[in-house]
Amino acid sequence: SSGINAEYGEKGEDLKFDILEGSLKHVHNHGWTETALRHAIKELDLSEASIKMFKLGGAEIALHYDQSLNDQLEDMMAQQKDDLAPDAEPVPIADFLQDAIKTSLELQLPYYDRWAEALALCIDPNVAPKATSQFAHLIDDIWFYAGDKSTDFNWYTRRATVAAVYGLTELFMLQDTSPGYSETWAFLNRRVTDLAALGENRVELEKQLESAGGLMKATFIIARNMLGQK
Amino acid sequence: MNDAMSLGMHRLWKDSFVTRADPQPGFRCLDVAGGTGDIAFRIARHMSNISKDHGPVTICDINPEMLRVGRARAERDGTADQFVWVEGNAEPLDFPASSFDLYTIAYGIRNCTHIDRVLAEAHRVLKPGGRFMCLEFSEVVQPVLTSVYEKYSFDVIPVLGHLVAGDMESYQYLVESIRKFPKQEEFADMIVNAGFSVVEYENLTFGVTSIHSGYKL
Image (spheres, chains in turn red, cyan):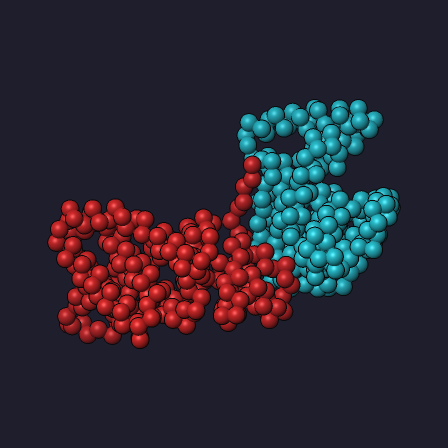
């Protein structure tokens, strides 16, 4: 019997951003937690009452960080597009996808000590919608810059296939101990190659896609299990 | 606040209000127009559950009788040292700027002549990052309930008031003051105009009561 309305006023958004940014340096020591938020709030000379602005608690730091990585990737892809000579050969889609996914995953490295925990937080039903929507936008961006103009696929199948490859590779990387994550990039290469091969057979692809839906949830659950949490 | 009027629900609403506020032991809290202590006692209890080592809750009310009642309750409960009782107006507030983490006002603001000035004063005394919270009667949002509620409020409440307290006029005034008070969105706009950010409201019991919240940023 309650209704909660949307937020009023934009000035608060700027300060929320500053608090989330300020929390990042505390994540190594404290994880994606309210403790990290509290440190940032104190450093900004604000009352601790302001922590209640963050309804999802420390998970909001993870969401904020995840979004900043996606923004970074988009900037890089846009820059690369601008740098291309007008008459240059377009990068083959498979190559582009592989490069974009690798770059995106490498952007996670500065906070990799806490990344599995960030993924595990996404299982929470309150956090999942935002996490999933951010991830979906990331995949859409990658496809946009891949420049695929084929009409064989419909929009949803493209998004699901790349999401599946990204998710599997992200999981693989979490337990990869090879130098420079060379095993992960080899794994990624095989998945993208599978994808290209699948593309030729539409019926096969659609069968594969039925399981792609549950993939992201599986990614989060495995990350959580790796952390030994419930 | 009367049980007959809210069918006892006011206790639940006040519980929700303080739970949402989630005051921490280190907070300096100011409760305005709550002389009998309903909110302040809940705030103190909430803080005590986290740590016995917490600061006093300041209560400001213009009515010395209400303060007397509240003080007596605290003495009886043995919690007198957790409260500071101040007789004073909601505007202007006799406190220095930027001195509180949490400002609460429950079922008091609708009786203030200049709501915008009360909000401005709340903004002044809060620290940067501090939170304003208001618990107040509001507009019932469910259309079927609206007509039932209207009938109830205009026909039943004053009669109950007469039966319970022998005072129909006060209850008629009460119902009128609820009617005149701005609706949820309009009140939220007033809070934004007073300088608060991240302003939102939450309806309880289909909007019979609403919790408004904003931060001084």
